[in-house]
Image (cartoon, rainbow, N blue to C red; front, side):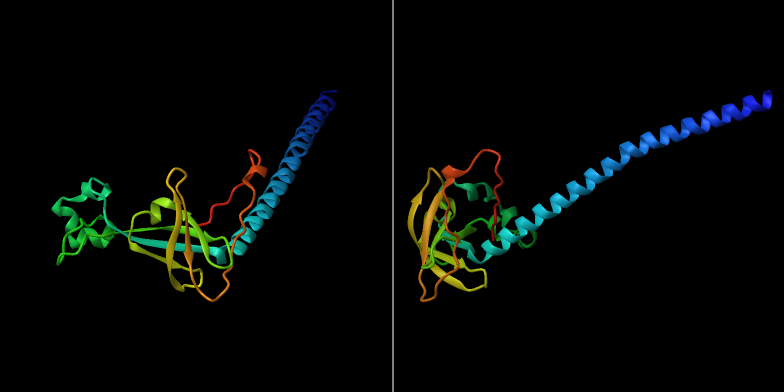
Amino acid sequence: VKMDLKKKNSLSGFLAGLLVLSVVFSVVAPVYAEDADSIKALRSMGKAFASIAEKASPAVVSVIAEKVPQQGGRNQQFQHPFFDDDLFERFFGPRYRSPRDQGGNEPTQTASGSGFIISEDGYILTNNHVVSNAKDDKITVTLNDGKELEAKVIGTDPDSDVAVAKIDSDEKFAYIKPADSDSLEVGEWVVAIGN
């Protein structure tokens, strides 16, 4: 009788263990399936973003403008001689070098940013803060293929920080057609591409 009781206890323990394992597997299997589906969806979304970037990149440009520093502007805080040190410039770049009068020339600074071509004849949408107050209206645009062209500011809107510039060439440029922002809904994805 004692032996039967031991067999019974070990059998019920074994059955209880199987029940626990089946519950664990029934919970874990869908979780792994959901993770795999989520990862598959994320990979698909990543491919969609990569495709957008590939199509848009030929129209994305780098915009550089030479400017005369404004009195009391950002560069005024770097007038300490420490910032004119060559070692400091090597690590942090020339943007922190204080403007100096060298041979009667006005001190200059460089503003750089991104833009994108919005028409095949070379109109570019960029930021106003990059191109406003450019010295002698000197603006250089570097295309995706590395070609550099001079640009002319056509119009600016300081309130929305938007500017339009134009590059002239006989070639037809790759461009991004602006869409209707009124058709966007809250929660839609937005991709920012810069150069």
